[in-house]
Length: 194
Image 1 (cartoon, rainbow, N blue to C red):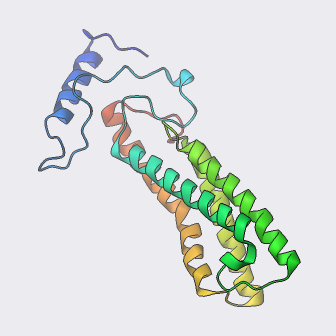
Image 2: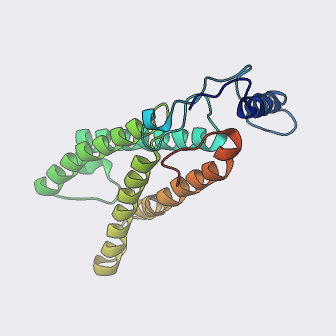
């Protein structure tokens, strides 16, 4: 989908780029594109499904990438702590060798889950994979709610985890919807942002 510079689309693109390079995060706080024209978007068939086209990074896609990276590194860190420390690093958890073994095993799984977030939020965030990962996190939050209903309230730390787990899909979806509203204005139509 390469644009010819002499076409109407090419002229509109050039005007749009110049409009966004005028205000370098000045009084309007508009996210700026690099000086000059960014590279032409790669045809959608060549972009990873759900990623944005290179050179057309909007604020919402940058936010989605930063969200994915922060969730990924947090999960990797928590998983590594659980793997190395077992039940000693879990607030409010006491247990025997069986529980410690389970926590250490799940620590490695959680670290792998974090690596999935990091991979999905690479150069161009893969929206569909991030949706799946956020949905899995919300499913874990639903498991915490089931524990509350059947066994009572766990440690207060798990209340904070519950809020984060249930909010993750909302954050991902709101950033994707924001991209869908803003993307066509910038010429960035992400195939996964539907």
